Length: 287
Length: 303
Image (tube, rainbow over all chains, first blue to last red; front, side, top):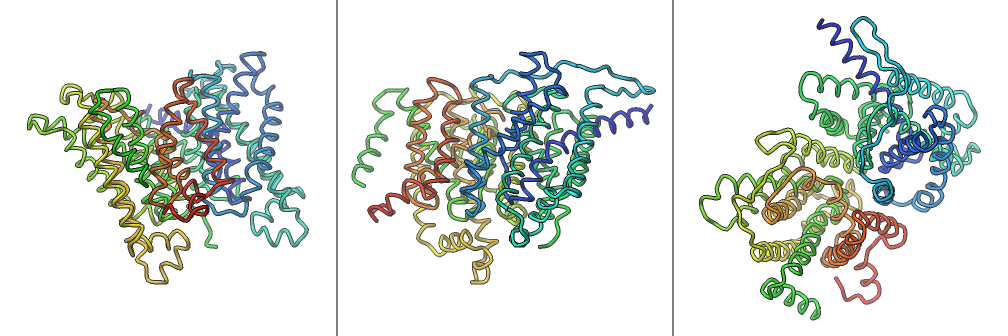
């Protein structure tokens, strides 16, 4: 019996954790390439969740069918954020980008609150669940988790084997050297912002499928994404996925053995501890 | 400067003229100013962006509430206990300061946000502190807006005095050196660790006392209200709007923003936060030195 409970907790932690990992991928990519910490990431994730939610509510679109539209919106939004807000401050001190994205987050969250209210939203259960022994596998979460893993794998293939992906990795390593080697760094920045926000909206769509949300949950997801990236390190999508799973497991074990209310504190304490011990991230290399 | 003194004299007189709504508006103006001074002492002078500064406001409120509950029988004016709230916030900053101020740049900002959310979650799961229901104080304190108002004034003047001292002292030059280039400051002999923690402890005190005063005024505190990220936003935007690291910036920024909130919030709740977001973006893009920075360049009079 104990083993079955343990298996259930591990599985739940894996499911939530892989979604956290996917949600943080966009943050990691932007952080790694542009050296900008997108504090509005949580707001963009929730915006993606609303996109999936409204397309379902208004047009009855299954979130997996509406995904191409949601992703396209995310990509275009990322591009427009880049050209309006990021480009002017690329050379400015870190403080500027931090505050600009903080402002952007305020704008997005409060627009969502004003137009869509603080009501708790979420999609109904769409897929059947299965029982394996006494362990319950929730269909929606399984699908979301599979999507997260597939996306991580696709991103790795894209970064490893395509010309654009190689240019992005070169920019992560050294933007000046990449520029000298003929990489159009400004174009890479813009595309990275596009892909980053696209990944945020994908994460949001999966959150809409699996977890209730409100505009206020933006802050929580922003912090979770930071915790994931700090633990998983920059530059490697697999690290991000693992970081997400670590937090998902820690959270689910806290819920099961300590107190459900304390679950969010775990990720934050983990985040602060890691930062205090390794001020540049757990898997950081010395530069 | 004369008009400023005139305004202050008028403002001090307000609670004695018997208008309670004007008093509460000015309470909010004072709160903005004090909190802007508080975050200015850390972020404005050292450049360490604190996204979790509200944690000191909240800890001050909770510590004060516990003091009021325990010692209300003594019969002293409850606002005295807000000093204990400030000291508690400072103590927290002292303990937290050494590890967290090792973290630099954006990582520091995120860590502070994490700390504030974690403390909020922990308090809302602590039954002794009322858990998620919060702590009602109405049974222990009587409604006394005049005392609250005067306490806030004393706090504001203290914050200004401390800022004036810091701005012109070796300590303040050290802090600004840290803001410009921490490694260089270290090499030039600034004890960066000590200076940063001192600024953190000092700034925590003012936010803590303000939290305590507001806890008593509202006679009810909970984690939702006293640890909300939007409170940090208000401090940060007020400081940026007025001009960071200056003496008069928080005063001007706090004044403008609180009036802006007062005039927008009656139409749509949360509209002011939307407006603040836009202001913050525009400030960084076009006016990074704030109002004081512009005035200083124009007139060289406002310091």
